[in-house]
Image 1 (cartoon, helix red, strand yellow):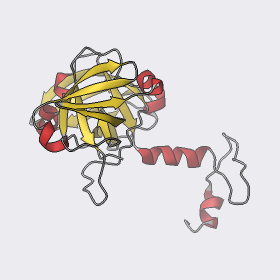
Image 2 (image 1 turned 180 degrees about the horizontal axis):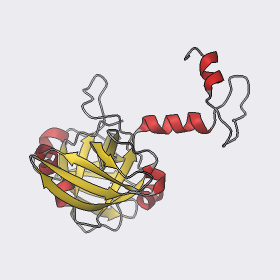
Image 3 (image 1 turned 180 degrees about the vertical axis):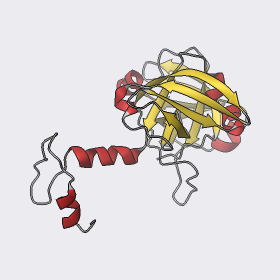
Image 4 (image 1 turned 120 degrees about the vertical axis):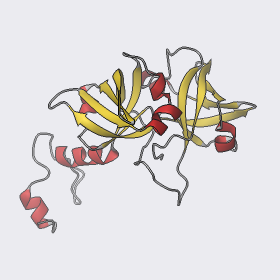
Length: 225
């Protein structure tokens, strides 16, 4: 589990067909240098497991599923990536709960400087768009951001980014059309499951999709009304 607050950046290289190598940048050694075998690190929002430490970074395992669903494959050598180590018990949650499991790939539109902030636009696939709501949370390349605006019934949205986040992450390196990893707020996914169907306490049967699993009688029966 992560919070979407980026701690450092690194350069991504392919070590072999099942591993990637991360090279430290800037303050990374001080912030992440004590990583151990088996630790989890979010690399551009993708939860990876440390397989081995190196003198200037670490090597992480990647599965074919991860490569197929994220931007970690087919990127230029030494691509800049955001890094965050997993949340420690009792640690501060400054962003929102991020699992590191990518919902889909979106594409950067444009960035417009607005006062002391940047307004960035993105296009997203429908399977991700359904989890995005105005003023809600979304993780873009592992960064916890707030949705500033969302097309009604569309697949585009905007976020407002403060200078600190813009300068210390790879958002400032994005060019129009660049792919980004997207993870919707996990709360929306649980709500979706409740709405689409639920397992009863007495049977393992799921209410068929399309039939209401949550209605006024259910809410009243369970003390919500």
